[in-house]
Image 1 (tube, rainbow, N blue to C red):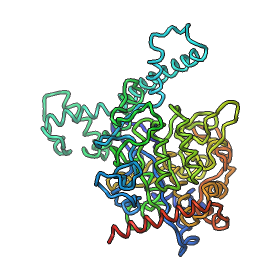
Image 2: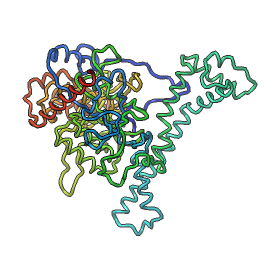
Image 3: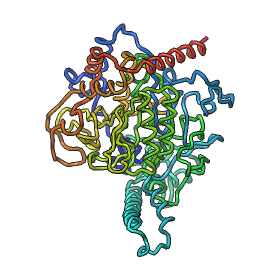
Image 4: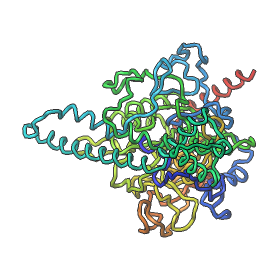
Length: 559
């Protein structure tokens, strides 16, 4: 997942592991920018004034991510249930090639139920590949093209070594190793894993190293943490930082054997398992909640769309996703009825762009909208690579074409001044289509929990949720029309804002994206209501059949 696309940059792990408090309402992304002083998408007024009493059709949205918790209290009622599959019988009942795919599919696991968690970055996998190619090679004997590739390989090798050393330093300076060592000493002395502040204060010892760590922990707990809450932060810090040292930039790390596929066959489709949650579903569950967490149920938070079923497709590890898996995830989603696909992941290098391009073309051909996070590097996507993307691989002298149903999303801050664009967000007046809320976004996380995350990962499902809303209430709109409506109805701004990734360099907000605007569901629904749908009849009928099948399945399950 490269950066897991919720912002790691900017998180400073001190010994106290302090976390900043929310500075915006938990539902700020639903608010009306004209009256509430937050650049929300105006969801509340959309339902109260425009959609009240209107009929809608169930829409399937695929969340291609690191996992979705299908049993979350705020998601369990809106999860897609494959109408043709009988749960847990070990049979491919609907003959789609995937056994027991009740809520979706996992392309980074195996039939025994084992799953990939951490993986290397794509640049690291490419370095490992080129190491084999150029091992003990006489550079002078290489062809001109191979010499060019060799130079590129050397540069990549230097980059991953530098990054690995940098993250090792960050980890050592984070305070995490020190606190972990302190816990180990206290636990050993007390003879138990869980301890209280009272246990800590009662320690008397002549061991100077033990008394030092007791003093350190006492000073931390005096600032508000408890032994339990601090340890949770330590575990979270480990999960964020250690993979960057041990797997992201380690060419010798390769967990692909767990999957057991023929990785050299990039068009192989039938592998994986039905475990859409996987070992860490916080990110994907957060994304799913933004799109469609049950509305008005008095639990947790409200998603954007009110008649959606979430299909979980797991192909994103803690590291970079693989192109083969991404391509298969897109095809699976399309083949099983998704008309909107959210992709909150990305990377700077691609192993096999062509196989992803083929899957994207397949989605476009089948009238599916693909919504993708622009990335969290504070970079201009017009001049920097961000994969996957809407530009098909260039062939010969022909100018590469773009996918017409692809949307690239930047992240908005909750402030409406010069800091309107999130400081980490990628941008680009050619490659990023629109901006949507992406800072301090409160949503669902695994195991019935909730949390606030920042990232273009959170902005992308804002658009996916709005797109699902349009496809639900206006089913005759094509995917291309939905994209056009969202962009054209966005709230335009010529205000001067700080360019993401810079300290104080400014530009017009309008220059940060193709539309120059901010997502607004109210405006989008208004425009959609006045737009004559151009969706092909076969796609309208297919969507209607899928909606009816879902309804019948749910009625049967309740009976």
